[in-house]
Length: 431
Image (cartoon, rainbow, N blue to C red; front, side, top):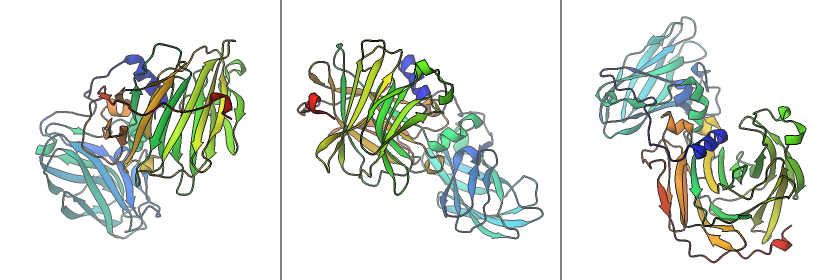
């Protein structure tokens, strides 16, 4: 998630649904959809092809590699699709372009960017369109460098949604992050947050971060780092605002108080900076995991934050880490959860997470009964809008990625009556 952007969202309050963004409405306009921000290698990923943030589809040498370009049409109707591309030197290539059950073989020739012949498709319903590119033949080592997909026609007459701002290309390929902002049922001092998280089977894509216990100064959840590695991650931002942890003054650095077994600790940057801890733990999809967070002032102008994760195999709470945040005097605020993808090449894949049984503790446990839905700047700028939230039979859910078409308006509120019993946790016996 663009975490600083999320904090900006919280300070702004409820947001309107969609701004103008990339929805232009000029009759007869041809839209140049840059592959740099809207394409992915969706097959043959073991090859050399890649999506460059400046040049689009490059190093495309294998006929097993498929590049897919995505945009959202606001209405049904006919579309003409062309490519802007060039080949190596004076080489010649043939490329198959396909979408909505139609395909065409187009020629790419010459070292200068030029347009190919068109493919005519019929978009049956408004929503995201996936256009696939596959190499058929080539005279050089690579099929082509494809910079843009050109889109025109009746289905584009109400505008298209796609990433049209180079500052968003990286974030758009990651996909929009989305959040649940829980309504805290007390005005008292909250010292503990409790949440349960279930990632449904098949939704645990590499690059996913399922954040359980978010608070005003940090976040705590689980992620998928690779096919063989998963982590429990707990981080606290420094009060000094910077993306470079080395620039934080000593008096504003996050201090480690303790850490659990097999936990690695250090600093993080690029999305704010602060103290980070993680434990490699191969959590499983389909299993419900419990998270507990504590945040209390130390009486000296600082606040101590501690995170515990319940390990089912041990039937016990394990401490991840405890951090002291200087120049902070607060109990827990802004209870939230979020879903994000942190690997741009994985942004065409969908993921979903369920959250249930939220409680806060202000001297006694109190159940959370409602939440609101919010999104990040990528969504709000209409660069990409495949992110939703809602309720399940057990609580709430978030979904993003995969270029689906369902819309849930940002700012939507959800109610779920939590009839579970309060957590039974002996705070004095926590590690």
